[in-house]
Image 1 (cartoon, helix red, strand yellow):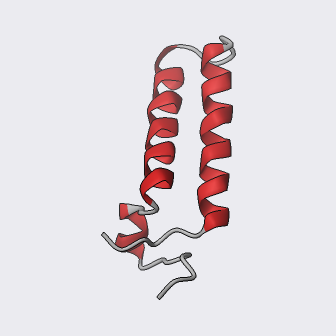
Image 2: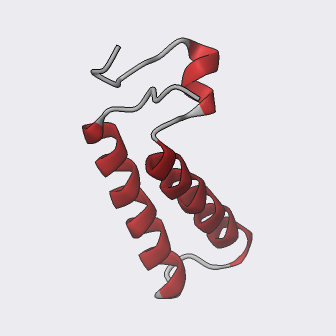
Length: 67
């Protein structure tokens, strides 16, 4: 897997995942929507750690500055 995510993109994803986790664990968002947010946040963190987003490959996006 070639990295296709830049640093700014990775940071934004981790911040969004942190917001999702806060909303769920503080009890602001519960039920099915809360679980969906937690799962989506986990996917955001995972893709940030490996610097690869499969959806970017399908759409043809590449925010990674390395060639």
